[in-house]
Length: 305
Image (tube, rainbow, N blue to C red; front, side, top):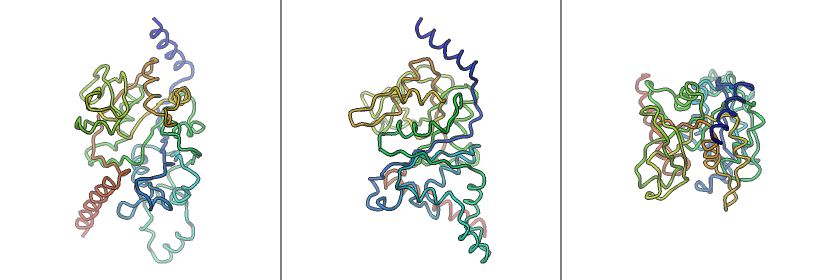
């Protein structure tokens, strides 16, 4: 009875305040220290490490642009000025390139800067992913749905596939629900991920989430569906994060907040993401992504001849 009452109350609040399913904003947590890439991350943000001639973060923002996003909330620390500089106009560089007829070097980046708005919420303490997303609360209106992209999770989709975030947006808009991206992984690797428990199946690619466990041992895992770094949230995620107690290491886990929503009448779905994924938060994953991008770059150059 109590659960039914919560669901009715939630539906009533949606009807009164309205739901904004026109998803045009994305939060990108980028305040981490990048310890696995030290010593280079002592002076260069991990998100700015290059894949060929563009930083990894460029690919993430481009995915957002291709998915209809026009406002990016990049949650940064006080040492991440390089990120702000990259996504800002540079009149001196523009004038130099124009003088030598070389504006094509920055044309793609210039287009992103013209089409998108960038905000830079500050995370002063490293208190986990949940806390990082909470920093973007002032930029998200009540009733508004928004995306989250983890910049370590790089997704490359074929021309026949929608951009990764757009795949989630379509499910969220259709179902008017929170959506988590998942991928099937071997059970021996599930301990590196958050793992979902299936409540019901809506289709081959979409399931409703009952519970989530963070980095379980294989014999404790609910399934082989691992959470990867794409989400669509409602504004309610902020209240859930605020009500989530920090763990023993002081971090506020996003998974705990998502479980809180699922248990309190919010519709939380998981979608099997299509595409090729690289974890650029690890040196070996970053190297594999560079190899992939390099091969694509060579093919493009050969075809252009």
